[in-house]
Length: 173
Image 1 (cartoon, rainbow, N blue to C red):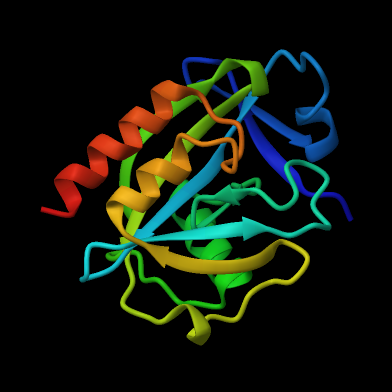
Image 2: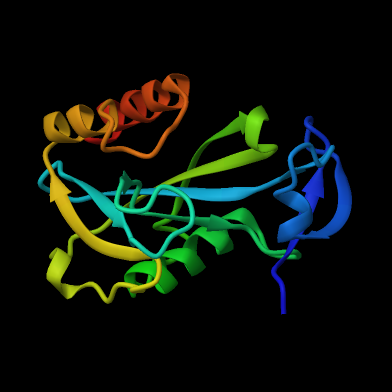
């Protein structure tokens, strides 16, 4: 059964439910909400994932810790928590999952919900969803910035990259 997503106007007014396929047409005329989730640890490192070679979009490129669509009827925070469990095999509580900001990606018709959470677990302790994630690793903040702004990272607006870096500067203090 195909994933169903809540859809919105650009300014966030709820419009109803559509299928993932409808949301991913060229110009659907409505927006959907993905949860974009970033993880850091007590050592000041950032968790990055390498996308599975099975992925249709951007296989083998580095990406945020986990991401996915917020399903119809689900809160963005619950979507972020579900994706962390599905992709990384980790349990994150509602208190641990911190909403940071919203970012509108007009080309993709998305209202991204950006979350951060602290995770003190070794990469080898995570259970990766093989069809989504090839590998994960912890990198220093400097390594993260170099990777984020390289061609080894999934295509992403420079503006959101800059916002994420600024949030990490505050969080990692």
